[in-house]
View: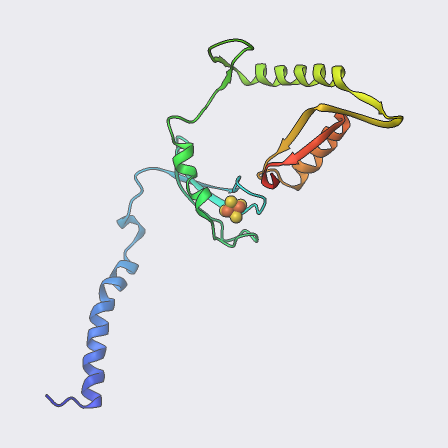
Length: 185
Ligand code: SF4
C-alpha cells in the first residue's frame, strides 16, 4: 500500500489520539471518584539518620498510624529526594516489635520492668548528678580541667542547630568532655 506523507500524518495523529484518550479521561475525573477510606494528615519533619537532615513528609491516619513517607520538595537540603533509610520508617514505626514504653533492668536482675517517663527522667538526672559529683576533676597535672570523664553525651541527627547549641552548652556546663554526634561516629 502506498502511503503519502499526508496520509501517514493523519494515521499517526489518530493513533496518538487513541492512546492519549484514557489518560485524558483519568486526569479529568473528579477527586470524588477516588474517595479516601481514612482521614490522612501530613507532617513535615526531618530524617533522623544522618547529618544531611533531609526534609520528610509523613502521612498518618487519624490513629497516628504511618501510611507513607516521602521527600519534602520544599526542603532546601533534599528538594524532595530521599534515600532508602527513611523510606523504611513505616516498617519500623508500625512494627509490633517497636518499643513504646520505658523498660528498665535493674543491676543483677534477670528481667525488664515497665516504667513511666517521669521515673526515667528523674532516675537519669539522679545518676548523672551522682556520677558527676563522684568523678569531677578540677585539676590534673597542675592544670585546671574542670571535667568529668565518666559521662559521655551523644547527640542525634534529628537535632537542629538550636538543639545542638543548648545540648553543647549544658554538657560543657556539667564538665562533659566526651561529647559526640551519632552521624560522625
Ligand atoms: S539518611 Fe539519607 S535521607 Fe536521611 S538525612 Fe541522610 S541523606 Fe537524607
